[in-house]
Each structure stands twice: as structure tokens, then as C-alpha cells.
Image (cartoon, rainbow, N blue to C red; front, side, top):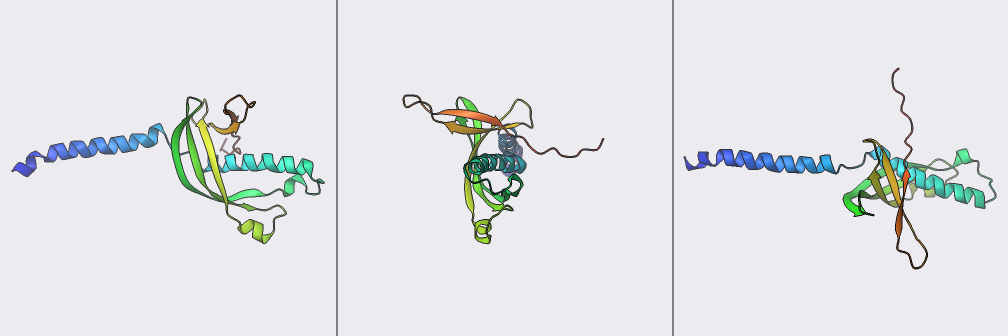
Amino acid sequence: MGNRAFQPARILIIGILCFCLGSCGLVNPRPPRAVVETAIAQKLSQTQAVLYRQLDATTAPGDLAQVGRIRITDHHWTTLANQPAVEVAGTYHLRGGALTAAQRRQTRNFDLYLRRGDSQDQWLLLEPVLGRSSEVLRWQSTPLFQPETDSPA
């Protein structure tokens, strides 16, 4: 009989724990994989554009490498510039472009900082910017432009 008296308390405690664990994901969700892929691709595109301008420009812009095989190994929420941000880490591979087979097989690490934008589905890429020698590090936010998806009319 004593065991039955604890049954409602157990159910209540389990319910509270499930709510707390579930709400953690609702308040500070993991960024969608497409957002992470877009952030990596945007950074890669910026780097390639700089290199393209500096080189002999023998590679056409359409022949640039693209991001593929993303693996997210960690994500956790933190605060940057007094704003909530999520740090996402993992690996990716490159595909396409004028890459050799060895370059396509190479695993590259990434570490990104993302923040939610004004709307529910908007994300911003946060990048550190060094100020003058006497200034502290500041964070620049860049909107992530995700490819448009076709929706029925």
C-alpha cells in the first residue's frame, strides 16, 4: 500500500522533468541543418571570392567548390555581445569545383556562432572582428541567405 501512495508523486516528477527537458529545446533550439550548411557555404564563398580576385582568375566563379557532407558534432548556447548565440561545431567536405580527389576526401572542421534574427526562421552568422589595438573584440552579424524553396502557388 505504501508504494501506491508514491505513484502520483512519481508521475508528477517525471512529468516535470519531461517538460523541463522538452522546453530546453523549445527555448534554445538547435539550428536547422540547412542554416548551418548555408553559414558554412557563405563563409566559403567569401573566402573563395577573395582568392578568386587575388589569383589569375583562371577559375570561373561557377567552378568554385561547394559544401557537402556536414556532420554536426556539438552545439551549445552561450552569450555573445549580451545576446544569446549558439556555437555549432563539426566537420564538412568540399565537392565540385576544380578540386582534386584528395581535396574532396579531406575532412574540414568548422566552428560557427549563430544568432536568431528578427523572424522565427531567420538566422545571423556572427563573426569576430578585431578593433584597433586598444579595442576589444566585437562581433559582426551577417544575415544568412538561404536558397528559396519552391512552394505551390
